[in-house]
Amino acid sequence: MTFKVAIIGRPNVGKSTLFNRLVGRKLALVDDTPGVTRDRRVHAAKLYDLHFDVIDTAGFEDAAASTLPGRMRAQTEIAIREADLIFFTIDAKSGLMPDDKTFAEIVRKSGKPVVVVANKAEARGAQGGMLEAWELGLGEPIPVSAEHGQGLPDLRDAVIAALGEARAFGEEEEDADEETAASEVLIGEDITDPDAEPSYDDTKPMRIAVVGRPNAGKSTLINALIGEERLLTGPEAGITRDSISVDWDWHGRRLKLFDTAGMRRKARIHEKLEVMSVQDGLRAIRFAEIVIIVLDATIPFEKQDLQIADLIIREGRAPVIAFNKWDMIDHPQELLAELREKTERLLPQARGMQAVPVSAETGRGLDKLMDAVIRTHRVWNSRVSTGKLNRWLEGILAHHPPPAVAGRRLKIKYVTQAKTRPPGFVVSCSRPDAMPQSYVRYLSNSLREAFDMPGVPIRIALRTSDNPFASRAKKRR
Image (cartoon, rainbow, N blue to C red; front, side, top):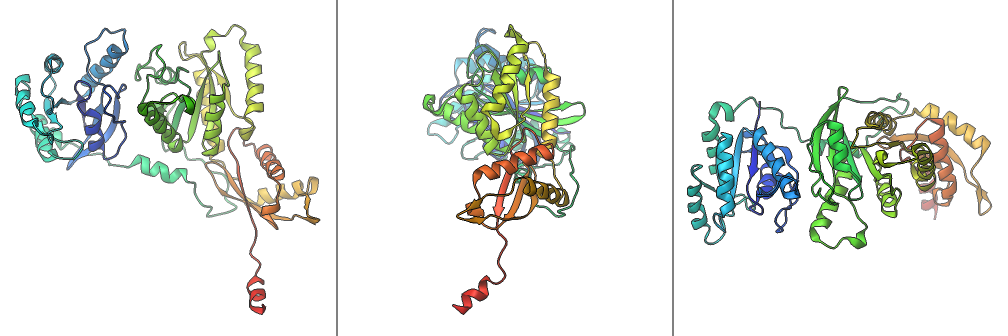
């Protein structure tokens, strides 16, 4: 089994930079502003021949439990309990601070093996700060530069010394690059057999992003789903900054949930950190399969909600709406009928979108929400054979043929499905540029109804078949 390493320390000592260095990619947000990280993040990491899980944590601060810094500290304490080894990180450039000594005592009481990481060791005058770290009484400080990748061989040796060779070189797990594999899958797969029957693979973890405006209850919803206080929550808007992934098993189905930062209107975003948070959320959407759009049922369908939904559909992801805070609604049946009518009217791009009332606080509606997610995922992966498509096309053309443009009637020859995730179809016709968008929408809506594909984007590409005599005509000229 692999071991776990928790990176802890006071704010702005470079914990997230070290985390990114160990995992090999820029997953955690990094900025000069203290306290960027708030939730704890876990990811597979590698340090030369050592393979382990690393936990990024919020800056350790001495604060009351009811405050936001206090709740962040509670998450860090959970990480310490989960870890097999602790990287106690200090800023070698600025030297020891009073909080470093206070938190060193907490780490010492945990009884876990500790490696003191003196980060920013490349800075001028860092030697003095590194020597001060001996005062912590946690062993020899290891000078590193997480930003420049310096000092990592010494860090590797310190890990082996702290854990012992048998534990450090334990049973290795496959080092699979999940994000790369997911990004390849999301591109869509070409048809190898046009007449193949639909297939559905439920063995890979389903990637679900949870998005919405600030304070809609996204983190609370994920905590309610997994049944633990995994993500930081509270009455303050905009608590979440990084996109945090959480592995979860639901009725034997493996899932990976991504919590994202609240997305405000672009005109209201001024701080660089919020821009980075929103960009991280957009990245989570692009890598997701299903996107749960969390709407505050007390103020639903604001302009920003519709823009978020439109972005998800344009990206080709499969959307599901969760009307959260349903426990605060006085007349639920009347409001639900109204909201579902608005969903159909305001989001016609994915007609039939699943919309479920939930309460993250009480746990109401969560099973129905997950049932809607599974159904939508199946539709998003659905495939229709070419034979069925062209029998459908015959009926469509007989009932409502394409219009005449400039006195010439457009001809549609055949249709085939080119990809799934989302369903994409290629229609061969005589003059693709002249085909009215209204008729393309008619084909899309008819496809959706005929083959039971509600609530997901459907893409139609118009193509013209090559004229075999075109090259001969050019030669005659």
